[in-house]
Length: 376
Image (cartoon, rainbow, N blue to C red; front, side, top):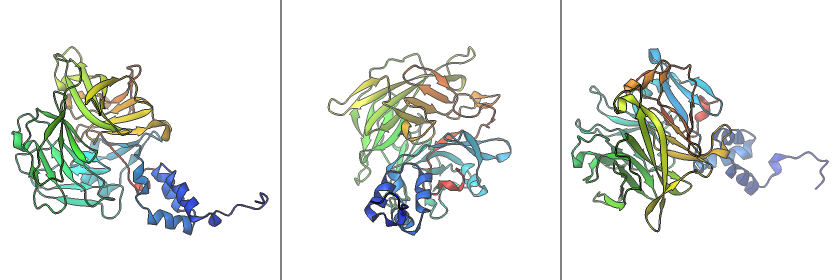
């Protein structure tokens, strides 16, 4: 090759161009790739969901006084305004899953829907009404509806007052109504879609499985509790898939300001992380995350490789306050931070001078293609 001649990117073979696109991790880079020239743009348009192979660094949804909804971008360490079209959905949102906001039914509008704030078209999915006596705390998608029309939705309640057959509900396209599961497990803590099944974590640390493709929806116990005794400490637990491994994470609260132990009067003291050994089906405690970073809160728990995203702290857990009203301090929610699994330290992860309000509580949402509209 004559190195004195200028390189013409248009002359690159199609398979080399496709190979380059496959190496891109960031959505923003994939969008820029499609803007280089016509041939590169054709690869971009022909493979609109290639970016979904990589988990994206989530942004933090925030609300402040006077109905101002904003997001905090960890990569740029900046707070951004959210377009007006998103605010009306965020105001009644309770959580997020696979880049979609999940609306919170209200008395005058009991319907439930999914809304993707990063997409300009095909960004809203109407779901059937839930029963009036079923209050969901979290909703989990089996897949991103933008790339998989055969998604399944599971809604569940953390409340112990719900009857066994009203703790969990499942919906998928084609259903006329939600289907409720007989749930014999103890109070639910978290749900995740893992290896083609929904896995349910109860407050004892036991894990149950549900195959949502079966005509009869049942739960069966697959893994017993990890070796952790915390009889006198408040806790909250999560399930996370990290590098193909199922993790159980226990969030441990401590008393705040000398009050008796109560979720409204506590702050996070530490986390314990266990990985599931698939063969022995037992839990093994971890003291590192192998360079991964976890994001926990009112969102589908997720893990990303920290080295893919500058500024993201490896072997750490980014956690949000889960809406306990009394943890709102001078500068907003105080039970939020970055916990280092290796040394047990905690530090802030968003601007402490940005005051948030009580409802809705901050939560993470993962950007999907189209995020350049307000995440610069």
